[in-house]
Amino acid sequence: APEDDNMLKVTGDGRKAALDLSLVIPGPADAPMPKVDALADIVARIHRASEPTRGAQIIFCDLATPKARA
Image 1 (cartoon, one colour):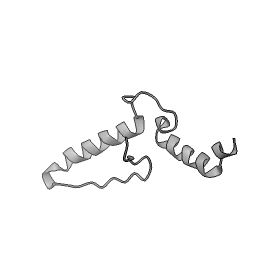
Image 2 (cartoon, helix red, strand yellow):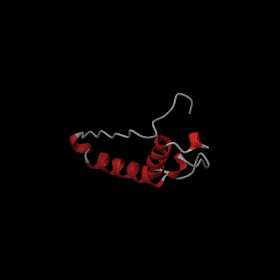
Image 3 (cartoon, helix red, strand yellow):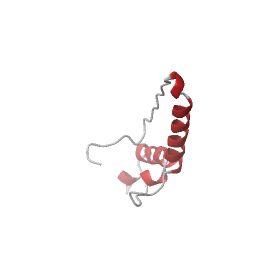
Image 4 (cartoon, helix red, strand yellow):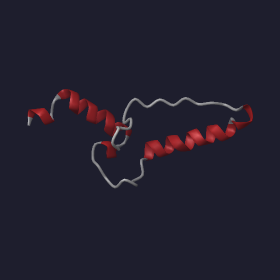
């Protein structure tokens, strides 16, 4: 149906899939998210390495932000 294939939705789904395919194709709630998991590992490593200087990190993700009902 045309409403399922409008360009804005197709583009949005492509951006979501690039972050994690489970954002487009639902799977188990505990399924691994390789890119997000890799980011978490890197952030944790940098946090531990910068602990002596009390370093801070700012991480932005403008995609897949939580909804009110998650």
